[in-house]
Image (cartoon, rainbow, N blue to C red):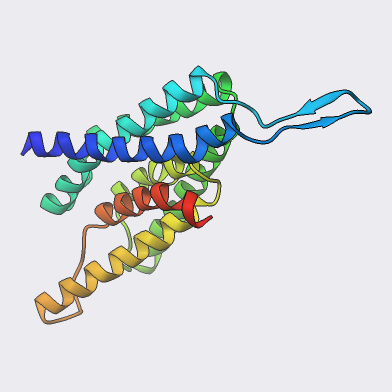
Length: 211
């Protein structure tokens, strides 16, 4: 089981790294340039440096490696372990901040603000659910929100919007299947973490194509 989880993370990381390189880094390296004769200035997009490459690879690999463990834990015990989610979020935040300082691309700022907005939004939904005594998302889902929205922000500033739509569709289909299997609608719950993580990676892979 551990070996399957490990290889699952490697496959996800490899796929995301290939898409990231082809759709984010490579177009910048071979992108446009324009020369203004009056000012004798050449304009060109910012080029990725070694910090952009190394830190983005570390971030994608780290999150991919943890994905299968988090999905398995949430499906099995309906809980996202704090001992994984909290350190993972802190390390991811550290990598993003370091990238914004040492990197040459603006993707780090898009990633940070996407994660922050996602965290605030999910916190508001959780608090609203508690106030209305309605079942919404758990605290584990809220803690995972920063990562789920920050990682796609590296690929495209609007990728988190695709992530939100994808996770809602996945959770809706999963809930429908659960209701059909249970033969009822009332009281049927699902683990939302797998839908969040699946939506995150779908957003990473398809945002460069759709946006």
